[in-house]
Image (cartoon, rainbow, N blue to C red):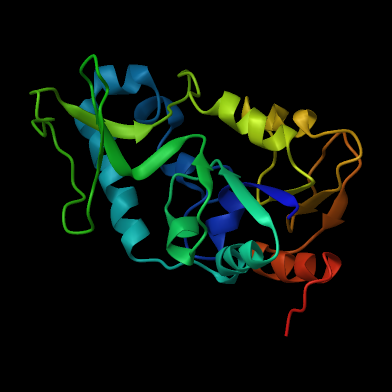
Length: 230
């Protein structure tokens, strides 16, 4: 079975109603990066940072996976599908995809600020983390998110996955955020690459462009991969 590797970004979840960061009206216009998504922000005003991610979790519980998410899950019937996502939502999981690597962390998880940095999963019934929310060892909990300026622990695993791809698909990402932007360079020479995005994306590689939304693009991708879409 061929290995189909899919890199997804904010555009993958936009149709579900998840606010994107870099588009007009995105979250960064309301919350500057420096205030909510850096180690310095956490040190300066942890209460604001926690509230920001509490809001994002509440938003996540109000949305559902879109047809694009479900379409990718369906591809597992035909390919060995691996998803490497920059998204911190859990919509791929909720749609049924089974092999997902989150480069930038996961919104429904928190981790200890203690030396062990243990990770804990939140439930829909308990999504708010406040100052004073502690791990069992007594350390403050923080979002399990890779902030700007922090290392990306999963990048080497992502490189390994991309380097094994028989087919590479990029959906809903401008490929401008380092180090995720460099993953495409690890695809084997001659690997077919498909790019799904309604906007023009500049990539210094030969790609098959599908200039459509994630849902429409995944439907078109299935046709190009000769999978019956009926």
